[in-house]
Length: 142
Image (cartoon, rainbow, N blue to C red):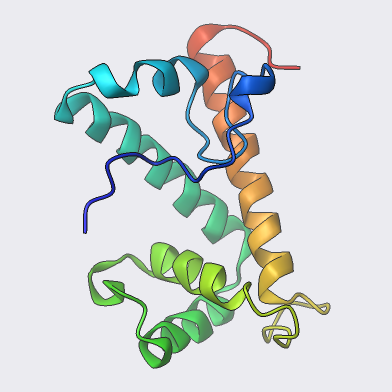
């Protein structure tokens, strides 16, 4: 199923952020989204996907990626077979993070539960989005 918007319902641009802490889009992209054609939306979607996958691959180990890939199949994550390993891991973490008592994943070096790993990935994803915004628009984000 195609989502009409990357919005996750946690918009921080209403509080003045130039990059949304929820969906990681730039404020002007959120404002102009409904006026974008499919090619413009695809450009934004590709950037977000690349940044998120980079964050996942930075935070998770190869062993954790493999474990999450196996769990995606067990949990029947929708569309998992068509996803990259990083996207499959992210979507699986999102599902597992709903259960606060879920045990830590192996190979983390500490007690990193899915929720903690998801938060670390999202912080890295946000940092990467900020960096792209600052580089693209030469505007430092406070």
